[in-house]
Length: 438
Image (cartoon, rainbow, N blue to C red):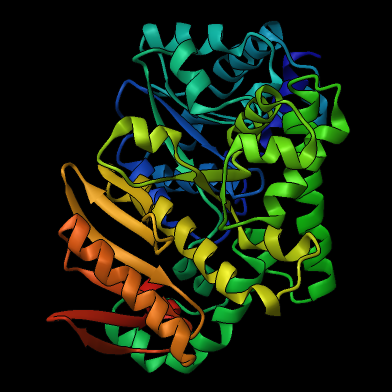
């Protein structure tokens, strides 16, 4: 492939002579934009199909709006068929072709999309970064470009950001409603409520949100799941016990929001605990699932306690064959877990998320802790209309409040908003849609 051919391919992905589709602006774009001029390698990771490539284009367009010459921006998409099987030699040739023909005027911004497709890419990135020759922004599928791996390859050189599927505010923007302030929330409450069920049910993968047909939504989500399992886990780690891997994944998705131990799963699936531990790590690395630990002031007790399992998007839960109406409470809880994780990464790096359970099996879904202080206790349930449900949720909150010395108590439900006064404490209840926009 000669240099002219390379530039012809690159032209399709760059703003040099055309407008490129950048999609709807994501919340994380502004935060990423503020760090581009540091001499750090900016890495963007996250579950497949969460919108990383579009975020790169949004960053490039923002640079152009800030008067950075279009020639100073290079976007290379390594999922381009012409670049299949790329290696370090081809990457260097692409860069040389860009410098020779496009002729950047200043220090260029180089966006390397799906960089994991290139063998020995890290040598190219480290070399340019050490010479301060270019600003480098990388994305990759969560299979091969995880923050843990980047920490080894680019020790001290990188800033890592995680991309999640759409937040509820972003989901509404994709449905042509932009929420700017509290007034917008109240003026559009009926519209917001109408769409909140769809978000609860099908989650926030951008492509899925833009499709109206439910059957197609389910098929797309199912394909995402299969791709992650097969490409990001089975192929990457060269797993031979394929059925065992798939059995474990199905087990987790059948037990979302439940507390689990590897020993218990071992007995249920007749699988060694070491295998379960290893496969579970792969599922987490692919960002398909995540765990929340049980709260304890004792680190040893925390590590030895069961953990609760959650998945990265509600669409997986719904589209993998589970009955929606019977799992409304779990869907709400899983969505709250995702949102808390998003807020931890985007806004509150010092936030720690746990669940609480005592010896009488009273449980609080989420304990939010910052440094040495428990900041808030949160229960999630679909409805408080049933007396025994309401009594159970309140009783657990009051017990945890006393034990953890926290008076900030919240219940998130589908549509109830009130204050419950018990034992000189006030428990606020808030609708899920309103909490998601808070």
